[in-house]
Picture 1 (cartoon, rainbow, N blue to C red):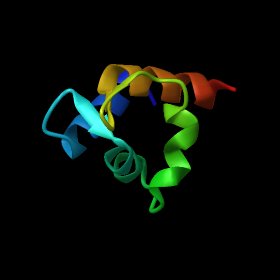
Picture 2 (picture 1 turned 120 degrees about the vertical axis):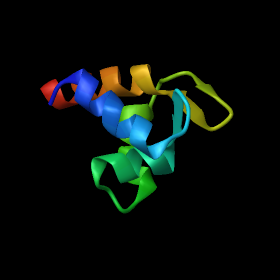
Picture 3 (picture 1 turned 90 degrees about the horizontal axis):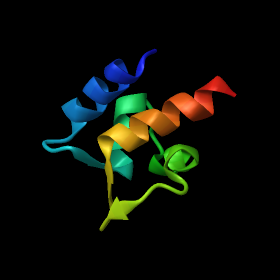
Length: 65
């Protein structure tokens, strides 16, 4: 999976450049929104929303390990 594919999937769940935990979970196929905390840990946020580009980069970093 490449970053552009991840970003596209996240954008389908959100109507902006920002996504919340539940939308990330839906995009990645998780039922429990807390399952994606490993991807969101340490990212900057505005309210409860994260920048899609940063989330996609983090997913790539975590999954390479």
